[in-house]
Image (cartoon, rainbow, N blue to C red; front, side):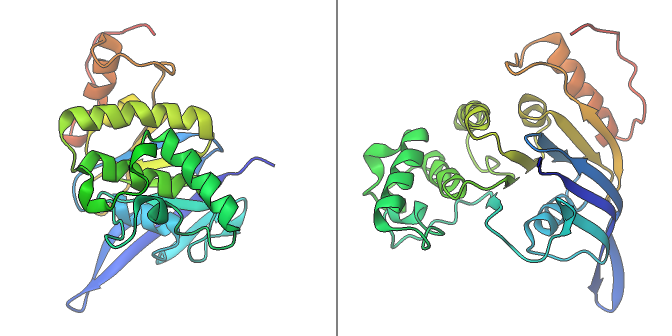
Length: 257
């Protein structure tokens, strides 16, 4: 059976100094198995909160978040998460960091999986190194390997490349497209980077300012290989940017894909 994520009439409020503040309002979203969804919006609009609700790290105030018709209740091995900071344990070697979460397996199985995913991320030569010996981009590769090694059905990415330099970010974005083809996981990413969203996603969910509501879901029809310099790519960037700067409609020339 195909795995589907369904968010229905979801709201999330916080209490701040005895005042109830709405962060997410009336979110409806269906994500099919294998889709890559990017969520964009202004700071404070609830992007990361929505991701944490899907991860089971937070609970909605009302509405529902369902995976295969079952309510999300806490974290689980069916969901992996990558944060903006790599969050590696500095006292553990790289291979040991990747094996976190594999305690149910034998040592031989853990070693095989860790080696496979470190090889995928081009880190085989560094498996006995410590995090302090790696660059920021390499550390983030380790974090990706650690999230993937448990083979989650849904991979959640909270601005995973936001702290990296431009060239390293582009390299990892390209690697993420290759990983997606190999893994076939559903991926949901929060990002401030519109170009990143258009480069990676099948659909881009555009949230309004707080309280976050869905302004539009933009389907990116550019195929699997995307040219950042093409006119079609630029058209999608402009369409999404126009929402974020307050323009509800886009006045751009027609184009063909």
